[in-house]
Length: 376
Image (cartoon, rainbow, N blue to C red; front, side, top):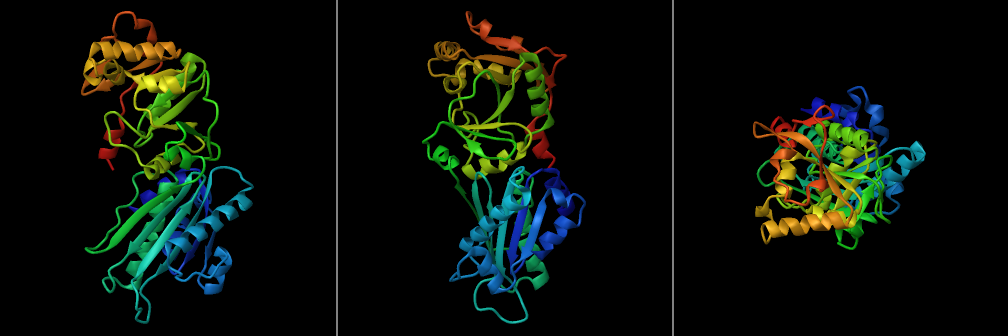
C-alpha cells in the first residue's frame, strides 16, 4: 500500500519542504525509499530540539504538539520552498509535531498534529492515539501515515491511505482557505480560476472565447483529458476544466475536498471552481462559452424531469444559454452498456443549433470515474 501511494505521490509535480518534530522520520524514509523523491521533496528538517522548533515557528508555544505549531511549521516550509525553488512550480509546506511513546511514561495523550500550507489554504490533521496500545515503532508508522495522507491530499492523489485506527482514537481534518479562495468559499465571489503553473487562485473578468469541461473529477482521468484535447482541436480554442462545488445530482463538495481535487490539475490545465450546478447559470457566468459534455449529460440537460415546469423549464433554460451566446459540444459516451449520441437527447424544437456533436473519430468517452474508484 505504501509503495503504491508513494509512487502516485512522486508522479505529481508539487514539491514541498517538510518540517517534523517528535515523529515523522518513517514518512521521510518512505518518500526517499523510491525513485522520484526529488519531484516531491525540496528539503526536510527534523526539528527535534525545542530550540530548533522555536527557530522555525518564531515563537515559544504553550504546547509544542498542537495544530497551531504544525501550521506554523507548514508556513515556514512553504516560505522555504519558494526560496529554494525560486517560485517555480506548485509548492507547499508540510509541518508535523507529535508526542509518542518513549522510554519514559508521559502524562498526556499520545498525539500528532499535521498541517499543509499551499496556495489555496491550510489543511490541518489531528490524531489522538490510544495510549499504550502500540509500541513506539507502531506509533511512529501511524504518524508517518498521516504525513503521507497529507502529502497525497496536497498533490491531488485521491486514493490515500485508510488509517488503521483503534476504537476510541480520534482523527479530524480541517481546511482554512486563503484569499481569494476564502472569499469564494464564503459566497462573496462566484468563481475562482486556479492557475496550473503554480496552483494560485485568481479572479477578475470572466475568461472569454473558451470551452468549459465540467465534472466532479473524482478522480481526473485520461478520458477527461482526451476529451479536452479533442474539443480544443475541434473548436480551435483552449479548454478550461470546471469543478462545481454544488451539483444537481451529487453531494456538495467542501473547500477541503475541492483543494484535494484541484491538486490533480497542477501543471495540467486551468481549473475553474464555481457553485453553479446548472448550465444556464454557468452561461451567465461565462458568456460565449462552449460547454463540452458527454451524451449522457446532454440527455439530462434536455430532460423535463429535472426542471420545474417540465418542457417549458427546459426551453427557458436553453433560452438563457442562447441569450448568453453559449452552446454545447457533445461527445459520444458509453452509458450503462449502451453507446449514447446526441441523437439520444430529445432537444426541443428551435434549439437544435445550440448542440453540436463531436465526431466519433475525434473522441469517444468510455471511461468513468466511478469505475476507477471501484478499483481502489
